[in-house]
Image (cartoon, rainbow, N blue to C red):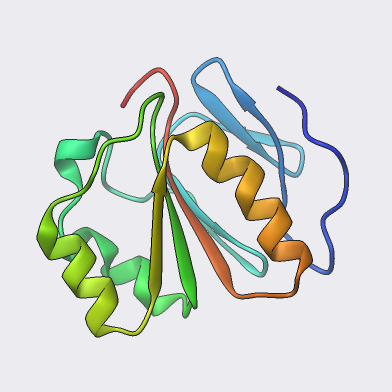
Length: 126
């Protein structure tokens, strides 16, 4: 699905998703990634919901988000309690949803000028 072009001031916008990938600006990514308005991490280690651990969020937290949108693939899958506690202890909000919903939500929150991170497992893989 292609997304509308309302990105706000962000350098990195999610412009499409589906068929096992997410397009950030004009580049399609088929492995897990983390997108922020000013940063892009294309080699995020988790590949499936069962890979989501507190330690997996260290590089995400180092990016300095105020909220993390966790996209868990084609279906919503709640992460382990340690993940929720790790982000809570860091003072970072967490919203869990399927990856298509996280992609849509990311652009909306980014357009508000907030420090949002979309931590995405690929559709068709999670």
